[in-house]
Image (cartoon, rainbow, N blue to C red):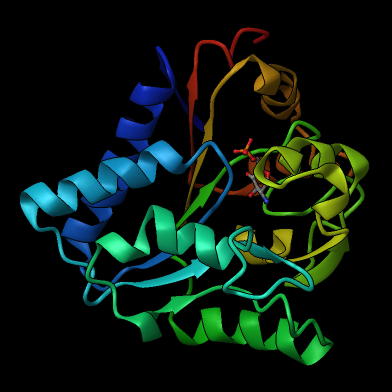
Length: 241
Ligand code: GLP
């Protein structure tokens, strides 16, 4: 695991965007695994600024997102479909039929298997961008998720729902379930870039970086098994290391 320590969120976003742009330059038809949440917002801003300035093209890129809330319409402003549209997709030249997110309205086993098959049919994820939850979740893989699972439906923990309530009107509006790539799916990515910012992530970062054995009580610890993980974290997130 390579750890890049940066001064603040801004630097974290720039560094993550730089790594993504290097990949696109090298492989203009790359498959990007994308994440949502507060942490990657700055990375998308950097990529949009680069697209406007340097005309980096996404016309051959495919994107697959980690997760979506269950029961929510893609058009709902709180859906991850809407998040991706408003933070990234509407600004770039990525064709609509090359963007994929799990379908929060179809959570059948077949739909989950279909998502994993789709990723495989694209040739697998070249670079997966990840955030980390305070309880160590990646995607929406909550503690206790077997580390080999593919895409599946999860029951969100109270702590995750509370952490994400800031994006909704109130806690009661936060869906109770989500559909997420499994840890098994995530570990198949060729490269993983995990970004973290702020002291509220310090405990999770400490735990992830000091785990030498994967433990399903702390999902991010599964990343130690992966041969190409880059962690980009600011001083606050690394303050307990
Ligand atoms: C959310 C997302 C994760 C994200 C994490 C941290 O629930 N499903 O993909 O990494 O929680 O979110 P944030 O970046 O807002 O702290």
